[in-house]
Length: 242
Image (cartoon, rainbow, N blue to C red; front, side, top):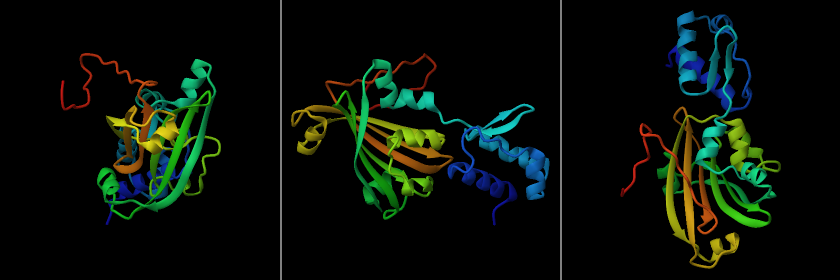
């Protein structure tokens, strides 16, 4: 049986994750939560402190707590925001959804995401274009348990990554960067030669321990590079070689 503070936390997280309480929404005041759950101020404070520590809410003195805005700046630094970059460069951004399907994940995806094999997830394939030229090829898995509204979303107005960023806050992320030579299919999508060098960026995100999404984005090697800027106290990602 769940402790009361865990049940309150789960209720609030569910409302945030479902979009019922969007970014900027005011969380009920402490006395309101105390009355709703017939509990002490200490219990409510513990719940709100945990949610704030996980990045789900922002606590404001005297003004109460609100649902936190998605970590736009952090995400933009870590994964290219295609529309934003195009606007800054004066380019025209477009995207095409090549495939959208809800299907069970295989053993390899299960190992990467930590979910059971056979879990049904939304699988979306997208190509991003700048001034009509393919900029990146993206394959994305979205957890329907964490983002149930994605079940009926066809990404008419925003590409999957932007759509998620605007709706679902995340607390943890994992990145893997690797090289890849384009096969026939990928070469066709990116308009490069077969065997051309490509840069692959894999990203997985979680919200308070619950898996949210996995994106595998492939860039033409001669059109893209990644830049990281670190201070002496910044802890960098581990690597196999210096």
